[in-house]
Amino acid sequence: MNTLTKAAGVGEILFGIAFLIFYRSILMNVASMVALSALLIFVAFSSPHLLMEAFNPVTTNIPLIALSAILIMEFRSARPHNKALQADSLLCAPFARSLSLPFSRKRCTK
Image (cartoon, rainbow, N blue to C red; front, top):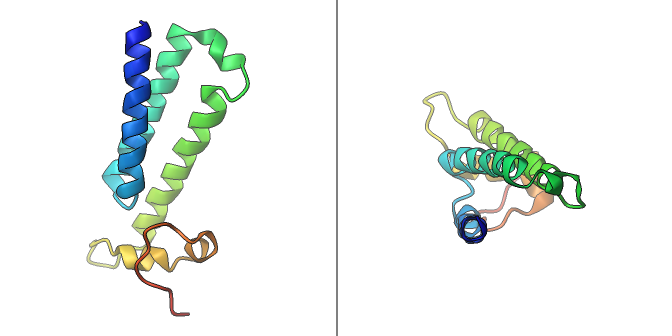
């Protein structure tokens, strides 16, 4: 069980790096939501006492799942009528200007 937990931790770090690079991908956000949900369920069954400690999986995973859901909704609202995703229009969303999203190549002109 200890090896599985360490492997899950290494996988989570690698996935986090991939997410930083490909955060504009809807598929990456869905994968993030699924993985975080699976990790939360895994901890609930394998070590339920961890759910009551500070910075537990509930207080860390659920907000990240919600953020991925918000990002997916923003991606979908940025789609033009032909359903092709334009990432540049997402970067000009009101929240993106205030957050200064990483890896943005284009400045908003409004």
